[in-house]
Image (tube, rainbow, N blue to C red; front, top):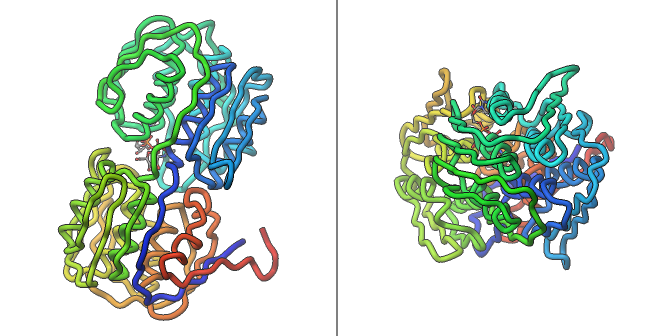
Length: 426
Ligand code: UD1
């Protein structure tokens, strides 16, 4: 298993580029299932979850070409024949977003077998709302041996009010509704930019969708969708992680190729912390003299403060003067980074969904363990200001969602390198 070795103390200076959004690319790749034509996606990030989804689609009979470098992070997907509409456990166990193939598979083929998902260990993470929605659209769903099996002659339009706001739930059912008979009206939808990105692709494929990006989405089903070419949005969570990297190290960093409008909640908080932010059209400059002030956060659905930035923000809070209250409203059990941050010298206590960070405490290097994708990013940020050399184990969590993180950070002055396991274990 690879490790990162990070020596703290350098302010990050220069320009760092943001990749395409993993959480947009995953549903967009699943959307290719809806048509027998070719779907071309650009700005695909080179991360492990994308490779997992490529394998998943290929195992169902799709032709998937994934090209990086000169091929400009492009993928060509053609689901001419879906000979095996099954999402196998061996492939999906590492990635919860695999449930995104459920809706498109049943809409296209009338049958789907999808293993119950794994992914980050951040709470129960059920998919009951996906199931309820598909049932309301006329699918029969059974669960056996860890697999969901869905069947229908053709999905029918329905009126669906989500009990709870769910991002992939909204995406999964939105894809299903594009090929359903008649109109589907969704209420209490997720408004995340990733939903809007997916809807843009679906519309380019011939879907009839109104209201994506708001809490009410209306879809008129069509008989068939066709191929399309689409460019994936920049990754707002990667961009946010870089903003915090600039702020925590007392650096001067230009975060390039991002969409500032998607980062408003984080920018607002960073400004409260005393960080200087200059917003351009597709870049954000972050500057800090290292004199940070505490500012509380409470995670919410978009456009509120993203749960996917909570762990990274907590690393910053350890370096802010005063007490920061961090409330996690989206997932239970999303404080696994706390223990590791405390091992590095942070003073954080957790009670239920609330963490209290007492700052500012100097951080020291330690051997730490990455527990999930965003927790790993939080530990890298802490290591960038820790005294000495921190060794982060299990960086495969990071590789699920951050493209060449160590190379990008090295390019702006961080001392970080990847090290293979000395015993060669995988
Ligand atoms: C997506 C993102 C993830 C992010 C999360 C919240 C992807 C691939 N992942 O995850 O990075 O952290 O949004 O912004 O886009 N819930 C149910 N029943 C369901 C579905 C969800 O109770 O059927 C609950 C969840 O347990 C959680 C909340 O709803 O408490 C929100 O989850 P959801 O928005 O579905 O997260 P994901 O789409 O899995």
